[in-house]
Length: 170
Image (cartoon, rainbow, N blue to C red; front, side, top):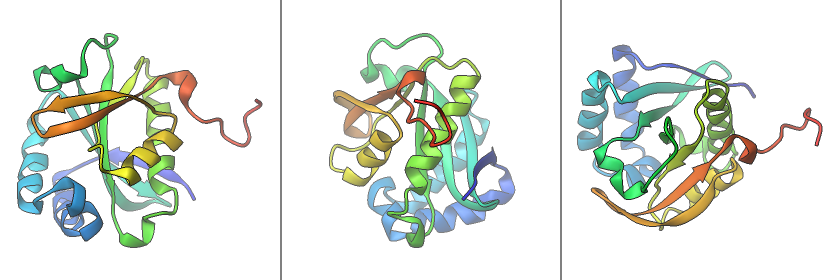
C-alpha cells in the first residue's frame, strides 16, 4: 500500500461531502452540512492547508494541516512553526486497517522534512479510535484542554517520535 497526498481542489468537494456523511466520520466530525461549509470556507484561510489522502493513488480521505491561531490558544505555548493536523479516512472498509496511522506518520514525516518542529492534534477524549491512531503514529498524550468545540485531548509529535519504518535501522 502506498500513501500519498495532494492539495485539495474545488473538484474534491463532492467526494468530501459524501465522506462527511459516512457514519464512522459523522460520529466524530458532526453535522455533515456544517462541516462541509467549514471545509469549503477554509479553502481561502491562509492558516489552513487542505489535502486529499491517496491510498494506492485513490482519493481516500481528507487531511487539514493548520498554523496555530487564536482558536488554538488552549494548546498553550508551542514551538514556533508548530502545525496542527486533523483527518478523516473515507470508507468503512478502510477502518481498522492502519490506514489512519500510516497516513498520519507519512504526513508528519513530510512536515518534519520541511522543518516543522512539532505536530499537534486535539481529538475528543472519547474518540478512542483516533487517539489510538495518533499514538501508533508516534503522538503522545499531553493533557486535557478546552477548545471552542469543547473538551479535547492535546497530543503532540516531534520528529524523533515517529515510528521507524521496517527498512530503517534501529
